[in-house]
View 1 (cartoon, rainbow, N blue to C red):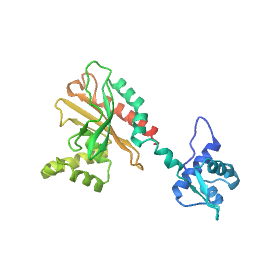
View 2: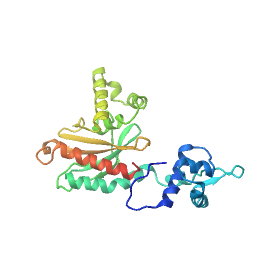
View 3: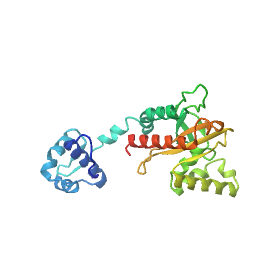
View 4: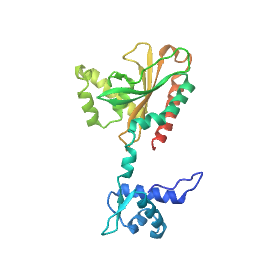
Length: 256
C-alpha cells in the first residue's frame, strides 16, 4: 500500500480498490478478505464492496474452497493491448513538443533494438533551419551520447553483454574501452550527458534517461544542437534544464 498523498480531489472508494490491487500484486499469493484488510490497514467490512466489485469486473478471482482472492490476468491483458513503446510515444508527444518549442531545437526519443539505438519519435524545431534525426534510424550504442546514457541504465552484467556484442567496442584498445566505462559512470553520477557527436562533426548532443527503476521500459530523450549555436542562441544550462523538466514530466506520465 502506498502512503496517502494530499490530492485535489478525494476518491476513497477508488483508493481502496487500487490499494487492494497493488497489495495483491505485491504479495503475489492468494489472500483472504481479512488478510487484505490488514495489509492495507482497513477493516474487512470497509473493503467488502470493493472486493465484490473487482471480482465482478474480472480484476480479481476467488478460489472456490478457501475463498481467497488473487489477481486475474485482466490487467495483464489490458496492458498488452498496446506495446509499452507505443504508449511511451503517445505520452511523450506533448512534452517533446513543448521541449522543442521552449528550446527552439529538435528533440528525439530512442530505445534499444537489436543492440543498437533506434529513434522512435522526433519533434522538429520551429526554426527554419534545424537538425533532423529521422524515426526508424539506427545508431551504434558506443558511438552516441544517447547510447552511453542507455548503457548507464543497465546493471554491469547486462551492460557487458551489450558491449561484447558491439562491433566497435570489440575492436577498441583498452584505453578506448576504459574511456567508455568512465563516461558511463559519469552519466550515472550526473544523470545526463552532453558531448560533441562522434558521428557528425559540428554537433553537440545532450541526453537524459527515461524510465522507472522498477520497469523494463527504458528510453533516452535527446537534443542535438549545432555546436556553433551554443551560447549564441541557447546555453548548455538552458538545454539541460529543459531536458530534465521534460524527463520528469514523461516519467510521471508513465507511472513515476
